[in-house]
Amino acid sequence: MGVTFAVYGDVESNERLIPFDVVPRIIGAAEWTALEKGLIQRVNGINAFLKDIYGPQECIKAGIVPADLIFTNPHYRPEMQGRRPPGDVWTHICGVDLVRTGEDGFIVLEDNCRTPSGVSYMLENREMMMRLFPDLFAEHRIRPVETYTDMLLSSLQASAPEHAGSDPNIVVLTPGPYNSAYYEHSFLADKLGVELVEGGDLFVNDDIVYMRTTEGPKRVDVIYRRVDDEFLDPLTFRPDSAVGIPGIMAAYTAGNVTLSNAVGTGVADDKAVYTYMPEIIRFFSGEAPILKNVPTWRCREPDALKEVLEKLPELVVKEVGGSGGYGMLVGPASTKAEIEDFRAKLIADPDDFIAQPTLALSTAPTLDGGMLSPRHVDLRPFVLSSPAGVRVAPGGLTRVALKAGSLVVNSSQGGGTKDTWVLDE
Image (cartoon, rainbow, N blue to C red):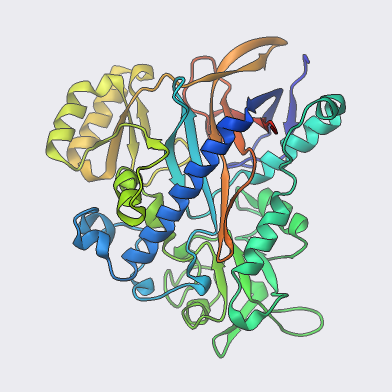
C-alpha cells in the first residue's frame, strides 16, 4: 500500500487537498460499545446543560458553573432565554474530539456543538477504501458508516415542528461557495436528498420560513444550518450580515421552524465550559462521567494561572473560543520568543485561556514516502440527537498529524485523515 490518495476539499480550508492515508484506524467491538455509552451520556449532559442555562439555570444557582462564565460568553444568546427549540433538542449534531493516551481508553479533548465539520471526509474515506480494498471488507466484519446520512435524515425529520407531519421539508443552509466548508455543505445536501440553499433563497412571511422555487414559495420546516448565530438574522444579530434571513429568529422563536443546531449552542463549545463537563454530567444525570476530560487548568483562576505561568514551556495553552489549531501554544515545540509572547497574552487576559499538559497521544501507522511511520491521531465521532433518541455513527473522523512529531491534527495545520473501522462482534 505505497500510495497516498487525496479527498477533494478540506474540513477547514478549500485551498488545498486533504491527504488521505490508506492505513485504517481500527477499534474493537467491545471498546466501541463502551465508548458509545460514554458519548451518549456526554451529549445528553450537553443538551441538559443548554436547556437549563436558557431555562431555570439550576446549575448556576447550585454553583456547578460560574454565572459570569455563561453570561459573558460571546456565544451566549440572551434572545434564547426562556425559549425552547422544537422537540427540546439543542445539539442535533455534535462532534466530540477524543484522544487516547494509554491503555485506559479514550478521553475527551473538546466538544463541538455549533457546526461540527468533517463528516463528509469520514464518508469519502470509507468509499475510497471500499473501492481500493474490497477484499478486506469481504473478509472482515466492519460496521458501515455510509448509513450516517440516513441516520441524520431521520434525526432531522424527528426534530421537525409538530405542524410538519411525517414529511417535513428540510434544507441545508450554507453561507455560499466561498465558505471554507462549502464542499461539505453541498456533499451533505446531495446525500440527504434535500435542497442546498443560501440566505437569499429563503424568506420569512408571518413568522413562517419559505424557500423560493420555480413553482412558487415552499414552506421550510427544518434548516440544517452551517451559518453561525451572529450571521443568521440581520434583524436580531449582525445587521451587516449578507448571508442571513431577515426575520428567521421570529419564525424560530414562534416554533415554526427547527434550526439544527439550535441558536446559542456555542456556549457548550467553549473550552472553559468544557472543564466543567464532568460536574455538569453528575449534576444532571446523577451518574459518574464515563468519559474523562483531559486535566485542565482554568487560567481565569489565580492559583491556576500562577502554576501555568511557571510551567508554560511544558504545557499546551488554548484560547477558550479558538478552533482549527489556531490561537494555541504547544510549549515543548515553541521558541522562547513564542512562549514569552503567550505569557504576555495570559497575563493580559487570563479568562481567555485554558492550559493542558502535553499529552503523549497515541499514534497510528501512516504512510510517509512509501514507508510506515507513527503519527499522532485523534478521533471525532458524530453524535445525533432528536426527540426519538441519541445515536452515534459507528466510527468517525480520524485526524492525523502528518508532520513527524507534531501534536496538531487539524487539517488547516497540515493534518490528514484516515478511515476508521469499528469491528463487529
